Amino acid sequence: MDDADRAEDRPVSTAERKREQHGWYFYDFACSVYSTSVLTVFLGPYLTSIAKSAADAEGFVHPLGVPVRAGSLFAYAVSASVIVAVVLMPIVGAAADRSGRKKPLLAAAAYTGAAATAGMFFLDGHRYLLGAALLIVANAALSVSMVLYNAYLPQIAGPEERDHVSSRGWAFGYTSGAGVLVLNLILYSGHDSFGVSESTAVRICLASAGVWWGAFTLVPLRRLRDRKVAVTVSEGKVGAGWRQLVSTLRDMRARPLTLAFLLAYLIYNDGVQTVISQASIYGSEELGLDQNTLIVAVLLVQVLAVAGALGMGRLARTHGAKRTILGSLAVWAVILGVGFFLPARQPVLFFVLAAAIGTVLGGSQALSRSLFSHLVPRGKEAEYFSAYEMSDRGLSWLGPLVFGLAYQLTGSYRDAIISLVVFFAVGFVLLARVPVRAAVAAAGNPVPARI
Image (cartoon, rainbow, N blue to C red; front, side, top):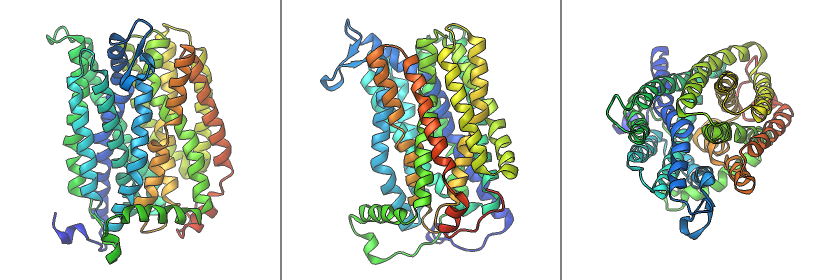
């Protein structure tokens, strides 16, 4: 990519815009396999089993001399990855807006995460520390890459088409997650016929997600284009990223309605992210379900999430994104209440719950992203989306931490799962109080007819 292409800021035709949008969809297609196969299905139970095999008689491992119940290690590692991401995301977002070069930063983050995920092939024996370290790197890299990916949305889609474009991006992601998960299920359930052990089959599934992530990232890197920005001399000095971060925070304080939305999103999305990352642990350890059942359940979530993302996108056209999101939060609270009372070793009931999750998962995430894109001032997309991504992934440490602590103290995952209802209830109340039309106008953007 030459300098002219990198700094291009010219009017584009409809065909060029569509081409760029399709390239943008493919990053969801690339990285969602990590979220599905690694984070949601395989790594939690597998890393927990490795930690348990290395635990002492009381069931504790001792990373850096700190006693940690083996069953809590995965949740703590997720929280640690989020803390790393919190440090990196605002700096990367500010640097992207300052330089206008999102693509090289996106490539660096994506391939760091893909490499760490591919390295999970080497998790065996008692290497729980290696597993935790690779999880932290991959999760943090994914969060950083999503800052840059999301920041393209207001640049490639007009106000009236963002709900549709954002929903299609999520649909692409869930489609790839479902497709790869089918292959994972074939390999895992038939590992003997393929001549590999169960452990080796899991490690192949983990590593293949990294290969997939890296391979399909080439599509958005070819089709997305960077935009020209005004750069001052001082912005190139060392420390400018930190100064830009402080400036971003001050700028956001001048837009209290945008901050109000972010606070609501931070709360309810913490619940969403915790459900995603801890569902397989809950199913395997508390409900006594085998790995094949969990894979089929997550596959069901993926398939229905595609329909859910597109269906809720259509609902938003008639009822507005805010009302549609509020409806999804009410459904989330009901799902968790049912999940608390779900009897063990009942896969059919677990599938019903998975179907309900899939119906609201994609839509609530896609519409939240598109709604926030209306609240971002022009020219500050990456730095504002770094704050959004901190809410999406970077500040979603409290849920996994509470989940891990609850298990550490009680030894029961049911006590942890019911606490997540609070995140959805509080998020619902905070979002309901945000006047989104006034927030869009305050950001200096045109107000859509329906939002």
